Length: 447
Figure (cartoon, rainbow, N blue to C red):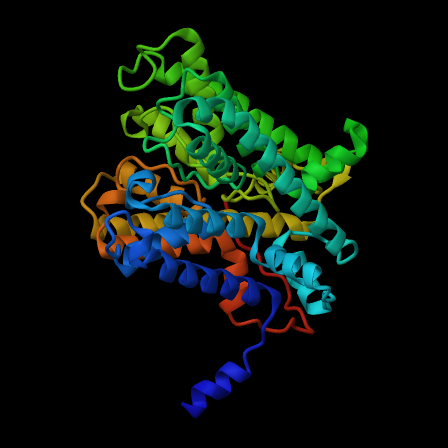
């Protein structure tokens, strides 16, 4: 015991480790609350593994569920899930900063370093002010979203339940969580332009990232926007446009999805199906009935995900953009990677390549493990693994039928996906100091 205690005392609490442990602690606390009998409609405990799975899915803003959220959980249980979604979406340190600011406590340097890590900022300057912007912006957007959605839910469910549904889905959409309390996601609302557009708008805003939104609101001119903001907007727009068009074409005559819909409903459904892999997890068509080509394309969209510093998961749009531009530069034989007449640092390129490699490695590894514990087809298994890693929440029917071993694998994958593979490595890996010397170059033939 003394050896373990000495190791814990000597554990350096660096920013990545604080974030990782913060998310872990929140997940465990949420699991304890959801395991209470009063959280379930039946009045019986759901069981710790299922409670842990639901808590991890909420904190990691994923949306994968082992039970129907509308039917199984009481208002108390749904409120706990909503609270966990908000904490997971804003981030552990953002929520901690809220309490610190309210109580008048000063934000220490170490806390600022953790906030910097969480929000993917380059500098420590203006962090507290940025957090205030993030909090105010989040509450405002979620409030507006709830007001718009109330035009759909109040007439259907009445005032009290309609307001609750509107608030729950607004927070879930902006935080890219994908939890729903309609019982059937948005499959019954594909003919509602207000509902579909509102959810798409919230998901896209949440997936762009707080720094991008603030930069856009401050400058409102394309030329004055930062390089990061312009790259994120371009990649996001291309993914949405290409995704909508391709899903529309692939699913046009699929009787399980778009075939029997009107033209307007088809366009709305295709747009929705292209938006939610950013990584929201709602669906307005049967994901399990998608063509295999569409499912595979959705895996690619989920893997890319949203943008850095946002509520979304995946390798991130900026990472994808840097890797694509680096590939183009290598093909052209250029020494520097340039975007909008700006040279991208080599460190950024290496980090992007590492993120993509680790992400692909995790998905392959998790898919392999799930093929050992589950009896589903490989495409469905890889779809589930990618959805968990990218914190999306879409499923082709595998989640409710997972074995206990499969649930634990997905829990770990969601956690790693939300915290970030590199952050996990920095948090729990061996941080060796930089060498003061360099070896001579060695040549390896590649390609």
